[in-house]
Amino acid sequence: MAFTLTLRRFAFNETQARSLVLNSSYEPIKIVNWQKAILLWLTNKVEVLEFHATQKVRSAHDSFKLPSVLRLHRYIHKKHFQGIRFCRENVYLRDEYRCQYCGESFSYKKLTLDHVLPLSRSGAHSWGNVVAACSPCNNLKADKTPKEARMPLLNKPHKPKFLPIKVLDKNQHSILQEWGPYISGWG
Image (cartoon, rainbow, N blue to C red):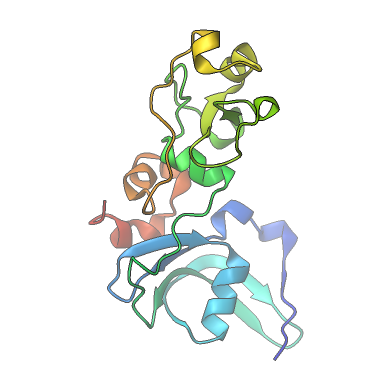
């Protein structure tokens, strides 16, 4: 069964159209985009616990409210969980939206990714080599290591094991209001 879904652009906010996925035990697992949320719902892999208040998607014949909180029908054991995907937003979450050089907090748009060992020196684009940095610190460090630039890191970069729920609680712009009851007891 193929679906073509469209969103009304004038009323759509991509950052507000994400969904929180819970394990069958109600433990928060991850955040997915609206397309993945609809796919999980339509393939009957999840139960929808909450919907976004105003956002809907339309297919040729139907209209669907966007899911906001989903609970998996089957329990996923942590040993089978693939871990947190390496991406810009998850690096910012791991680093608590804080520049790892000056320690200041910034919004998503004001942060950049910095390679601790620069790519030009065979540094990897991975959890163990990438940190959140503000533009001034990233430019000041340039193509040097933190030691060469005399800019020590606040925290050593690492791959997180679980969704950083504590960080989501601290950064209200990262969570949606309807997620509150589902994440308040975790982390």
